[in-house]
Length: 183
Image 1 (tube, rainbow, N blue to C red):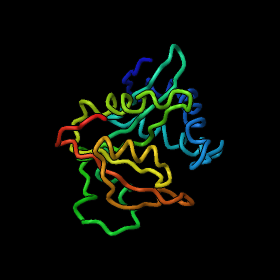
Image 2 (cartoon, one colour):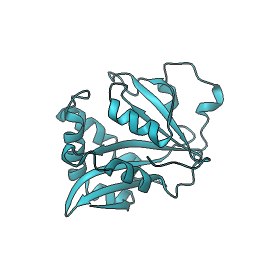
Image 3 (cartoon, helix red, strand yellow):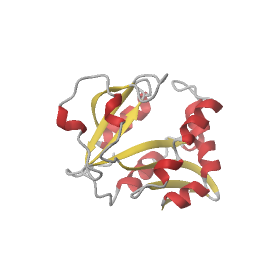
Image 4 (tube, helix red, strand yellow):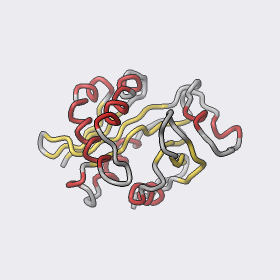
């Protein structure tokens, strides 16, 4: 397997395969996401893919995409912090376009899990970013994902409802000003 770091234009060219990864990765419990969820997720994909600083770490097994992670720096006018339902310190949500890298998706097809693929993908994605921290949303019921995030150094800072009709998500931050320990 090979992990390649791509820009937005390159990632968009793989959108069909990325949808397949998303579909397989999030079909099972606790997510139970179907075709409508896949389409919703990828309606939001092209906008950040056009932003400066977008990057995608894509895992290939031969010509097959088996994993992905992508995101970009949060803009000063991001609405991400507005979705929190827990009170947090006011300065936590201050963005300037450089402070926080938003990790929008991280997914590995079931057949390729438990082989360190997610860890390698995450590492490739965030190595070299110029941001002070990484933020992501994750479902609290996703025990394996949460365990990985905690092992990588993320800490929970609150809960959010990231879009209308969404389940509650935990908001987690990784401080990049400290050395990241890869479990």
